[in-house]
Length: 369
Image (cartoon, rainbow, N blue to C red; front, side):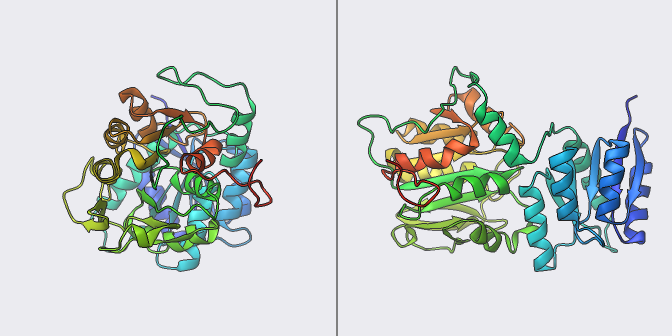
């Protein structure tokens, strides 16, 4: 039986020992090393080459964020961030770490935990360990984009430059995005490529655990040139032009009669908010004037909703496998025939801009010729 080799990085001796005890109860898991600071984490990662790292953020000598960035650049290893979620600064560092290539995040155990945390920890750690990682996410995307195009499932291939909008298609008046695992970094790239003068609402469903959702809109707002906030029930789409609105934790976000509605309808694919809930409503409400993209993530949420938008005449994009942290949700969409285009991450934002009738901006901020 192949053992899962884990490196535990945690400065609190009490928490570190608890994590090690949880891991050592599993017959197929071995703790190959323990680190109390970021510098030691890097040294042990290079020396021991673990299968997966359980990484704290608040560490002495070198922070967990700095250690994550170094590891993903020099000795790429699947990383699960295990962090306290109450401190705003630590929340921001956690988002930064995931954007830098860490696969997923979860909160630290509490003293009153009933045993469910241990099960989630092991399940998440095993899942993270199976994710193939290479370099820092942005380096990975750049390297793949520079290579020769590869045919995608369904016979579609990424293009070397953003494709033009199909002749005769109406200019899109709304953008809808869905993402899960690997989503923070992907959203930064897509939103960062949307021009400031793109005056259409951008609605986003991102799967994120509730303890970490509190400051995510503020973090994303600081990473992009656009105004980002959580949606409020009853806002009109017209008033949201030029803004990026996120579905709040544990609420579906849909569009209905020109308004944004937040609902507590049952989860879909065990998700609330659900990408399918948003996409289905966009198909019904906006139809051919919608543009939607399904980004990296685990599972199949968003695939049938993307198909609904395509059938309604809207423009649909799925992120390609090479640039996805996890090619789950986009893959399901491609297999369903829901994706009109399959594109690498660095082409999605500019393609959405073209579909909305606004040429992408150059790096200096002026329109491309």
